[in-house]
Image (cartoon, rainbow, N blue to C red; front, side, top):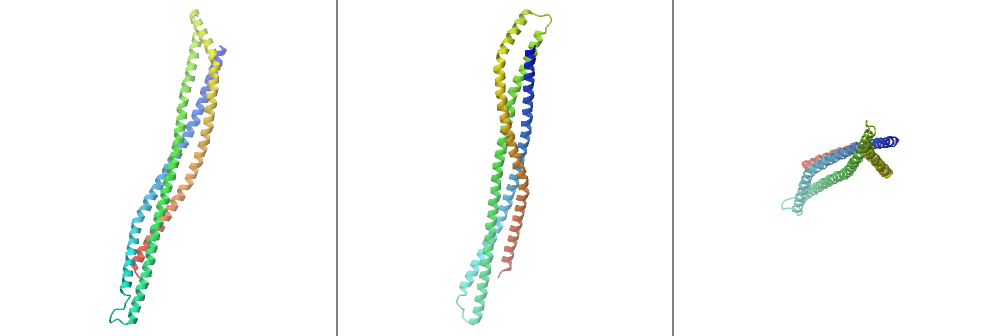
Length: 269
């Protein structure tokens, strides 16, 4: 019957459109999952940077404390030598006083440098922690996008089952109509079913059209989100080498500073 044939074509077309939507959503889901993985990698790198920067702080703090102790000792030596001891020529006393003052100045400079390096190391930790937080936000956004797409894919399944059930029902009606020999009671029943089905077709078709419009709107929104995440993924790919280079440079600077402070402390005045 033309009516059943037309409905069959409509159901098959709807199923094909549904399959195309599912394919597009699946492709989008893959891109979103890649964005989650990239953000997780960035977070791991940033967390490693935090650990490395934090590991630098205790030795630098110890060096700064040692420098402060040497400054305090030099200040006490200078204080003790503020008055010339008995039996020491004034010229010799002034020479010693000058040497003590020079030593104190050098130790104060070394102590200031040591504290500066501690501050720089703490700033490096704060910067790495900020990168971890930024990566956490990116992970949360990408994960939410994945969940939204997964929900959209799952929402297509009931509609697919409904369309498939409609095709199955049409096949059953066709089988009843073409049965040989014909049975009047069966044909009357099929006729009643066809009449009821015809009445419901317009409403069903209208609902399907609205659902298709909603699905197309969701697909358009999802594609826009996919493009945003693709751009974000590309940005992350360019940021990670730069962040690693900055971390390496910071580590080298901290190591050089630590060596400089240690050398100053070992050299003395």
